Image 1 (cartoon, rainbow, N blue to C red):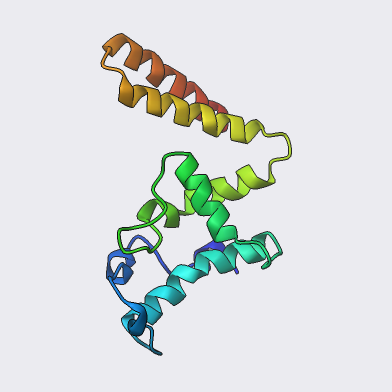
Image 2: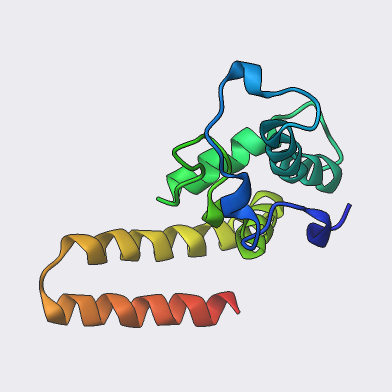
Length: 140
């Protein structure tokens, strides 16, 4: 399975972000289709990490939450941020980085973003933006 094989996308996310109850999951139902498409992310992680005995979707959700990124919609499906290929790739890179260098870069960027939300000092915000730009340049 390739990243491009994940069928839940930004284009069809709204269509499959449906509210449903337990009885809504019959074969071919909108809820059943949404579940199948959202599960592609978990299947992708199982293949990338060569293990289905670990809840990679749960680890990914926790990773996103720890970075302050919402992992799910109000209806419990993956959020738009969670299905973004760049976030999926960043999680894989972070999880497989043996040096923790990539993890530290991500954490520094997220700390700066959180700090920026809290400060009302324009000079401080400019300094934070400068740090973010440096971190992004290093990551590329």
